[in-house]
Image 1 (cartoon, rainbow, N blue to C red):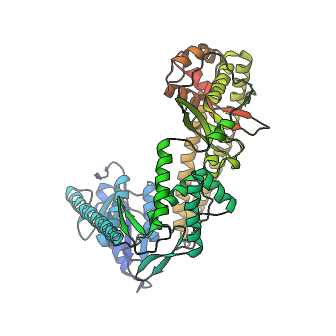
Image 2: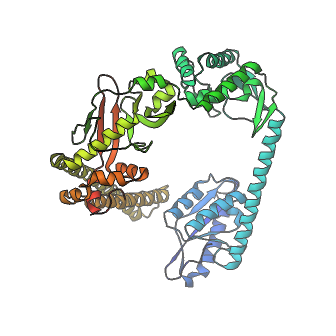
Image 3: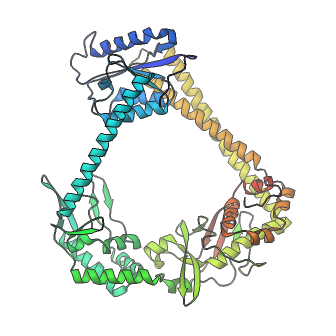
Length: 553
């Protein structure tokens, strides 16, 4: 609950005024002036408590209280968020808002920033217990109103869908939306409906979502393209497994409208035969239950032969045969690190079974969605890739030459990162200096020019943002300073790497690799077969600071 502002410091009071129409606003003394005068008198009566009236005026003339889209109100909320206001004074509560829901939203902003709210004529103040009681009552009514609206909306949607009518949402391929005054409804688009039926038939022929997506890519068929009510074009994208599955399982195509777990006969025309629909659903369920990963032939054929031309930032090399007894126990050891060089997207872990054997892979996400022909990398066996990456880390740890090169590279990257941060810090300093000079210029002119008060508020916000960013940059530079790698301490931490690695569980192994490595980029094209490992600029420094502790902590 909002507490009374301490009297040990001045209480900065902002007076907000509003008038619904612009009638008589041109008079020398209008309604806005009368409201402000009442607010100033109230603030003056609390002068002994340190209350002062801000010179900045927050006047909304000609704006309805049913909307929050008011320029002076926006400026007031912005100044509150910037810590420039301690108390908001209004003539009557409805000057702030006539909507209980919006009123509650505004008071939530006040409460988060410990701002007192006072209504002069209604003796309403959140600085005392009676005012807070009134506030709670208003918020309770606002909550009740929101819940009633939500209940009525849910009931209306349920009744609409149970009657078979379309309740809105994204248009789907095969139908257009007729937005008549009586309500929106789906009407068949003959050309698109023919394509939808062919997509259902293709799935029965191919038996694979990926195979159908590849065929649709060859035919250059796209998802539903339509314009929003604001005129923005959306859709028209290539099909992938997800969008294709959504199409094949949408009961609207057989003339039914879904509502939770229920299906109701719709008022729109079906475009897919019920028998065809049921056959597709049966095949989809069968494929899902079998657990077979579509495209296993492509995965098996992508098994890498020979040696990766692995290179990290230290230009190291490694062999898939590896050293030591590495056991790849985690199916997600490189999740979040491994990326496809060709598609610049993540490679996600997956697996398939043949008999009693389980095969793990990292698969290019783009290849999964668009088909194997779209990506030369496609996939890589998880065991070999994980062993290769661990061998690279082991090589850095055990080879003094590589360790020195890695430390030098990390130091160089840390220095580059610090240089970029210092450059940005200087830019923010210049912005802060320019804003301060502009503010002094406006204050010297008495802030009498039209729009100068609003510009002052903008300058204060700009200065506050610059100061926050400068503080963040200082912390980042300090973090990089603390992460200077010490060769001897790194050696001490990682000397028994194999023993430590074998003792770790899967989660701690993954945490250690994420601590050391920023990203791993795999190029699986036949002519390349390369792996690039990029280490974090603070990685070795963090390990050095661990002393003799376990490095994956």
